[in-house]
Length: 385
Image (cartoon, rainbow, N blue to C red; front, top):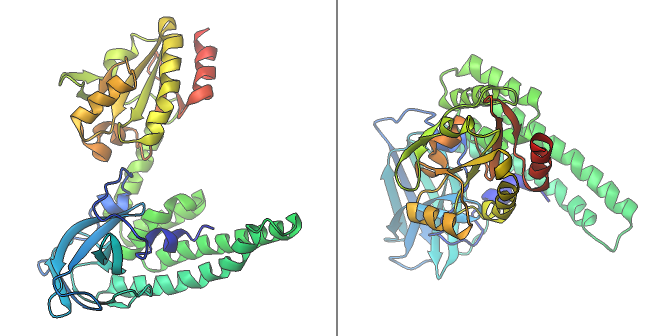
C-alpha cells in the first residue's frame, strides 16, 4: 500500500547509518528557502534506556538509509546539538546500537530552540517542541495518520488471494478513493500554510503526485504569497528548462570534460551524426548499468548509418567512471564534471532521474526523449533505414 509519506519517512526503519545513496535531491533539499538567522538552532534532548556515552546522530534519510550529518554522545541521559540551518529541513535524531536503531524521531530542523525526548525501544513518535514548522509538522503527521489508517483494512483485503476477485476489486476501488483524498489533503495543507518550511518540504515530496492544475494553483499561490521563495523560483526555473528542451526545440549545448580531462561540447558531435543520443547515466546507477547493453547494441547496429552517442555521466568519482566505461564496453564519447546530481549537464536538461536520454537530429532539433531498449531501436530503424 502507498502509505507514502509515513512509510518512506518513518524513523523506525532499521538502516545503515553510514550508507550512501544516489537519489536525485529535490528542489526542497537543494535550494535555499529561508535565510539563515544569526541565532541558529539549539537542540536539547533527553533519552532514557540507553548507556552513558552512546552516540546520538543528527541525520538525513535517503531511501531507507540514514545519512549522518552530525553526532554527539549521551551525558547524564541528555544530548544536544548546535548549529545553523539555511532552510527548514526534515531531519532525524537517532541512537544506533549494534546496527539497530535503539531510539529515534523525525522533526523539522530550523533556527530556533528545539526540545526532543527519546526513549529506547519506543516506536511511538515523540512530540517535538520548538518552532512554527515543527508545530505544522506535528499537526500534519496526525492528519496524515488519520488518512493512512483508513487504508489498512482495504489494503489487506486487496492483497488477500483467498478472497474473490470482486471483493478484492471493491477494496482496491475504496483504496483509490482514499488515496485521492490523501492527495487532495496534501495540496490543501501546502496551500493553507504558505509560506512555511513545511509547505516547501511537502511540495518537494508530493509535487509529482499532483495533476497539472493543482500544481499550477500551488505555484500561483506561491507567486502571490512568497514570490522570492527559492523553492518557487526553482520550480519555475525547471518549468522553463522543460519548455526550452521540449521535443521540437533546439538542443542546449553543454561543455564538460572527457575522461582524459579534455573539454568537449555536445556541439562537437551533432553535425557529424545524422542522429545523436545524449545518454545520462552514472557508474553507481544500477538501472543505468542494466540498460547499457541495450545502448551498446543499438550503437553497434547503427553507428555506420549515422548514429552517434554522447554520454553525460553523473558520477562523483573519476576512477569509478573510467572503470565503468571499460567494464560496460562503452566506446562513444563521454563527458562529466564529476559533480553527481549537481552536474551542469543534468541541470541543462532538468534531468531528475537516470537513465535518461535525449535524441537529436542533425539540425539540432530534439526529436525524442527517454527512448530505451526496443523503443530506441525502433526509432533508429525509422530514422536511419
